[in-house]
Length: 366
Picture 1: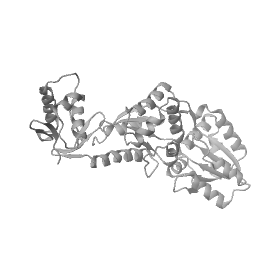
Picture 2: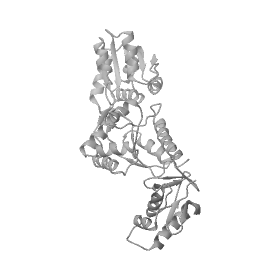
Picture 3: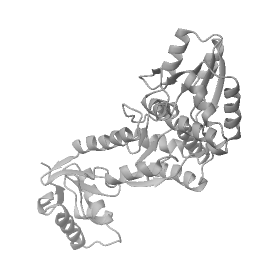
């Protein structure tokens, strides 16, 4: 698999399925850091959910809205742990079930139930439009929410005359590692992180709140606007908190982790297409590595700085003195510059750097 993300440090802010995300990104060459902005409170310890479930069994709903597959599965597992699974499934089976997208429908089918209607857009707004158009006055509507809350469904349905029962199957708790979270926002502002991945709106809110608390938000926004820091959100709802703070994330067409990874990889593949064309191939110089035709060059940190100097010069001549200034130490010996350039040629090909007699060196552009 291509190492298109080699040299990129990607921060994963999710708690759930973070290992899956990290593995997918690592396979494409990225270095992954993990700093969950929030944690998920296990549903089996949520007494409020069990109480709401027993109340729903006592007063069955006419309509059930399932917003997430994991939420429905967790709800049934929590009911089973409390000894109410059969009763809950019976209640759900007699109700009209509305699903927010294919994942919710898949969980409904796995539970032995049938979704009567599925939102093609995978949004709560489409569900709300359907139910309001049909009319909900006098109906009892149960809404299984994700950890972010109601998405406006409860308020709007109640205002239209429905008797709404809300069931939050998993709740967001504080970060399990506040030190790592604080360090992540500082490092994002300081240039130590190249991309940040978000999988939930509450997680994005919490990460931005940490950035505010650390005084790092202005630096993060500035790096993003300069193109040095990429933000990636799993869907438009997750993107909203970022957009409100001046950060425009890349978003996949479908709200899936696999699609999110592919979208981020595509971003870096597109960056490859704008790489510098040299005599030995297409060259990209990133923060910690350089890639020639997608392959990482075996360069020391000082060699990387010399190459960055030549690329930044845009084909103009770089003097030996300028090369010496980016090398460690205080050497003024021209031979040290020659050695550094020689090692650069060993790594990227003899034709990568041209010597300009009595003047210095320049990158050999194609």
